[in-house]
Image (cartoon, rainbow, N blue to C red; front, side, top):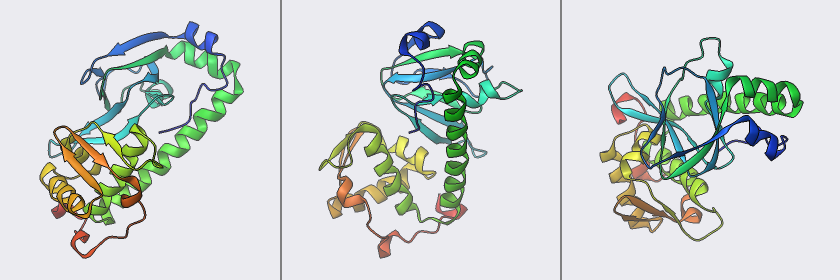
Length: 227
């Protein structure tokens, strides 16, 4: 999750600049390569940005919760095209801000310009981390790391447990592996007491997932063969 790009803009001014949009679970906000004529600030709910890999799999490249902004690259790019497909993970709402209104807000509020720069820097850093993760991190460690990320998105890491209302397929797309591999890792974690599995949801115990080094059974090569 990122910082609120529009945190310094008076809420009334921001709402005049955009319009509310509501989405059902599984509804597509926009598709990759669609015209980038607006960006979205998440008001409620959660969204996933996805791409299709060369092998035809769906990979989740980022998650967005309340206060986050998505669609930023398309409104800043001269090409003006979406770089990923964004889907609502549950019933959700955004404030859609047209490109022209966004450019006006950025010019009128220097804090918006600075926040945009920080978001872009964070995105570059996250992309680098994901590349290193995909190439060199054992798959079990990747799955645990993304479970912690999801626990932070859906709850509080200081609580004893967090319910993540997503399927193992969603976790596989985020972790860059197959559902079968995620299922194997989750069953190992269930035996260790760090997760409980239920239909279309995972109950995670953040304290038991965080900071635990890879065990012998976790050492799965992160090269192409580990998918």
